[in-house]
Length: 229
Image (cartoon, rainbow, N blue to C red):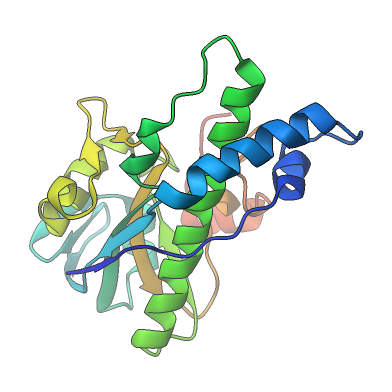
């Protein structure tokens, strides 16, 4: 088990504005973002927790990792020729919960939410780079519970069980709904692969703000998975 703390990140008001889709000069918006970044900078502490784990067994519908069973045809297909994997949780950090923008200022809340999302993204990128460098892996792909119907949110529970006391280690808790707290956290399994894989490639939903790759009908057919529209 290893914890990465104080992960570096760099965010500019321009980046936030671009993500918000604003195309016009807006001094008020820039000032709001600048003030939020000044609050965030000194206290933000994004973290990542991961473990080296091993695939014990794979059948048509399930995978067993470190003795813990997971139900997913796609996960099993992706790990068919893989021995070592890296279960993980990454978070923007609960320290940011101390900042509470006024509920009456919707734009400020939206800007703050976007900043936290960018910090989470930076931590995710940092973890992947760390894994590649430390374990001499050329290419990694990952899957996240809830990203596809084939591997639902309920699978967060066995994933957390592999990682031990995630709350004590990095301050992330799993709710009864299987969502995480802080909300800007993500869990999953990294695995070495020769061909890059993204869950988005198998999902036809086009109105997803978190899409990282285009839907690939051919690949979806190969995996024999039909996702809900």
